[in-house]
Length: 224
Length: 224
DNA sequence: CAGTGTGAAGCGCTTCACAGCT
DNA sequence: AGCTGTGAAGCGCTTCACACTG
Image 1 (cartoon, helix red, strand yellow):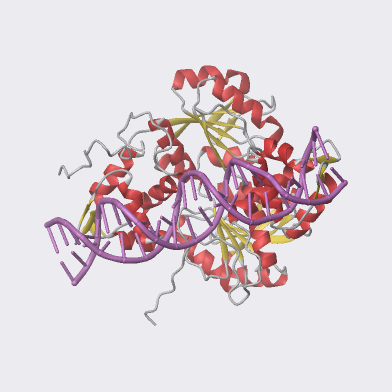
Image 2 (image 1 turned 30 degrees about the vertical axis):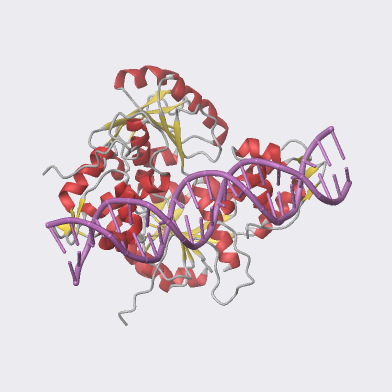
């Protein structure tokens, strides 16, 4: 009982206990693949080389080829990659070939901006509901959404098949919100609160800490 | 009290402020140090062990000690770290012991949320101006700020000694904004546009790509 | 003892280099 | 020739293990 599970947040590799066959794609690779997708969408030629992708993404060409090789062989030696085909393949392999329902928790300034952030909709993420526990906000409309009381979270998540929750609440409330989201069946969390959430291994958390980034900038300004 | 400090000449890693050597401290370490700072601020005991910090940050205890050792020796064997003293030391070494002026470029939903994001002010980042090139927005007030025309960027940056620029404009405009910021003397950029900015080596860029994070969540949901 | 600081081992991502295909 | 796919080398971050300290 005192046996604390060694939660290692650095282990962001895709892992599946008891499924050793499952290919493990490094996390940096996943992030780069998403960047490559955007580059492919803006490509002007029908084919593109790893060097050209690398140039646009600001990485090494061998890196591009290695990244792609985690998912299969897409290129033609001497020619490069078929833009349209590679784009379709990557999108499917990343699970981005369909819409996903997300909820936003927290109707403050940040949550309000996220609700209709055009990038989400463009890439298949559909915000289906916005929650807040502030009575002054509940029931009011916010950018086309009615703000819903936080205690109705579970119902909505089940009814709308929501798989991702976005946490845009103050730090003090973030862990409770995470617990509630997980309890309602959400398996992925995008967390904007400046705190390290404790979650079960099977739940994936991505942290976007706005201030953290500024602080490292501060260091570089000081030192460089 | 003046603790023993690493003073041996071979210790090139401990960097004093104003030592213009780059890439001494690993980037992951810098990010974790900022997290440790937050943990220290919420600590309840006067001293704290590396194991306790590690627990709260979700990392290995040896990692914590190694991270801190980049900046000096702060701990007392058998006791741990003096919370207040460590906090003050880290803040200074990270260049976070003073205010920094930042500008926000882009007065859309995201820029609007960033302008008075409480975390910025709390940690010493002061938004001094907001820019946009949309004539419909210029001159209007936004959360206490007057939106300024983009072509007046350089003046403001010089007058207010701005060292950091936050880019919250659409992708198509981001590179131009970055060029203008750099031209005006900004050395640090926090970029929210989904594009890889091309900047000189001496400029530091941090990217916060909201959609990228959601997309990797999508992959994990698909695969795990 | 409890806990730090650190050399060394471990491990994983990145880059190189080149065989092989078109 | 032009370019991919990949084994192997390179490199840097993480973790271990332990001497040492109050």
